Amino acid sequence: MNNLGYQLMGAKKLDEAIAVFKHNVELYPGSANVYDSLGEGLEAAGKFDSATQNFQKAIEMATKNNDGALPVFKSHLERVAAEIKAAASKNTISH
Image (tube, rainbow, N blue to C red; front, side, top):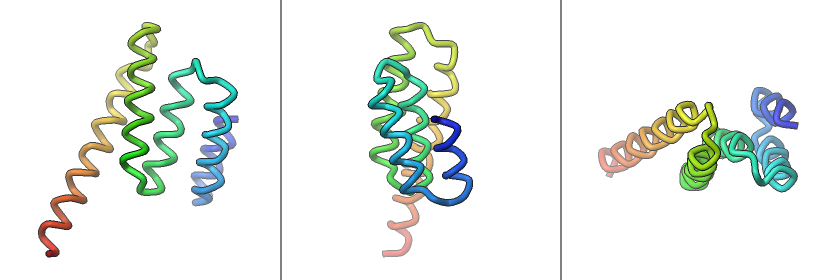
């Protein structure tokens, strides 16, 4: 199901991708990876606050479960934090 979400993202069908990722979270609430994927879909849609929440959830779960993907999840959170900072700086400059 995650693959379908990423295919939809690649086709720029972000609302559909996010819906698939949300459904996957409902199906597998114990998986850190599904929260990370939802975060990526939300990030692609410019929904940085929601993306941040999902990346943080993925990191929290991965830390508890000693998940080897933890560094990847952390890098995604850092990336979206940089995007938020860049957007805030852009807004400051344009006003």
